[in-house]
Image 1: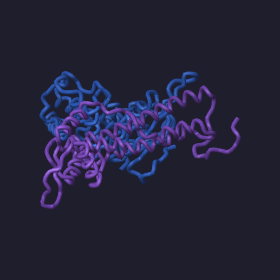
Image 2: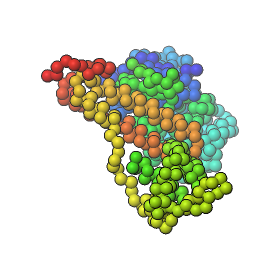
Image 3: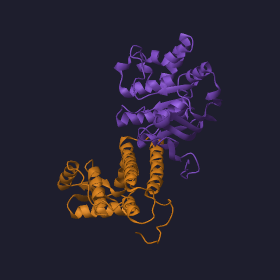
Image 4: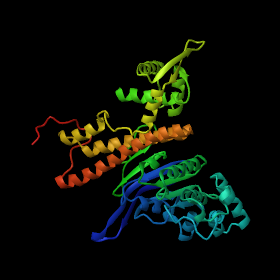
Length: 236
Length: 194
């Protein structure tokens, strides 16, 4: 099943002489269980792509669909609800709230959604157990390592019904072994049914993906797809 | 060949420093440590052992019931093992890299779209990196095998980074030289160059 579909997405910032084409006719799909990596130098449009995919930014033209829902047709209230219930986000840093302990951080999106506290806690506990951090539930973010914080952020992003995870350089602040652990975790969450769109500038992390897309100046320059017939597909 | 012999020799010496072994055991232990990245044939093992015996690094002992000779490390062999572990590996005698030659020639030969050569290679290299990563993930191996697999992954990554670098340099130099070159799959043309 296609979880995320971008069709000819263009995003233009500014106007006149200051026009910047952040994305040019980008088409991309991610299915259930797929890990898709987007690579490219800074300024190539990676983060814009992630924001547009998550409904945090709207394309100038083209369409974005999440689990079959065309985001441009949703009312703001429905868009916000879809973002909250179906999409999880992980960033390079600043993922966890320092004054909440680990399990409270994981519970937070559910509680904001109006889920009862006991239910939220139960789901958070199982999300933590899935990533092997159940024993860290009562710790505070500054009492665990950077790699563990990122694992908790991933657990939170996928707690409950969320199946689409958008990750922007989640390994950015980590050493290479901890970065590897994060990718191994993302990979195993995909095997458990999640879909991950990962932005990274490091080929070694992108290599964990089923599909790697290279962005240059807002356009897809080329892509590789291991899940396809084995030949290097050109996206353009 | 010389460097390959050296690394097998030192690998076998390192194994023998843990106790006497015969050839088949050495081969099995070598492959267990390196994750079968470099399969050894038994002939290589015995050739290496006899050279090391000639050099006084190992000494043959008893023959077991199946006629296999058990080798032990000598004092000289131990000293050589210690020296090996305490000396960095020299970056020399690397075979000429076809990719580097290809890119240099793409810039020299007429009618080659260098950017397309880089892009094509980068796609292939990325695919190799994905496959190496997938294999490592599937293996769930011990630390030695994991680090051997990581070595291949980091080397492929280095090539990928170099290709990114090439692309950036080519993009800025093509602006300077004003212009793109002909299509990606055109054979080097016979037309006279200026």
